[in-house]
Image (cartoon, rainbow, N blue to C red; front, side, top):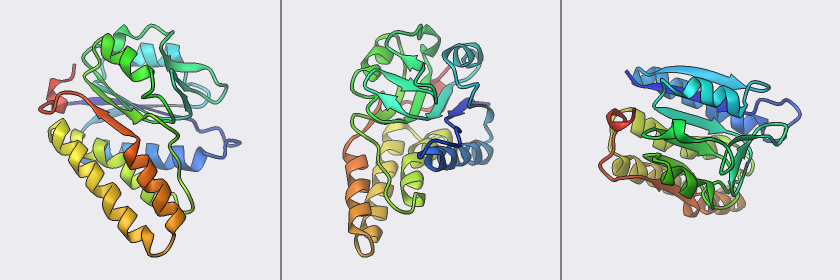
Length: 201
């Protein structure tokens, strides 16, 4: 049975808390539906040390938090995962992030040390108006991958979800549709096409 570590910024003063929390709630439900065990790290426990300590028996670290080009950050702008933290615990595992910009340089560092699945964005991840379609799109890849599909299939289904939601939004909220397309364009869903959850350790 696969195990997932779920981390998210739950700081009540953060304007993005609703999005982070919605994505984390969705991640929990996805794990339940897929029969995966999971543990949760939230503010103030979302730290590099806690991630390192709890990742050893997990296959995937899902995180919804602020990001920079080289790091996922917690509510205090401390590095949860970065190009400067010790990341060898990620070897043969997956990182699935809803965080801005982390695919710019953090992705390459994690791939260098052996991460098999990397999902993130190489620009700002933005929601506008109703967060539900943004959350659904951001989480579709995790839903597919944990259900047992290959990485290539999960990537395709995720992009199809973005396109379907964008089409619906175009009729009612063109600005939201534009930002949804922006997120799709800047999505980085990396790994071997045939990879499945059973290949992660």
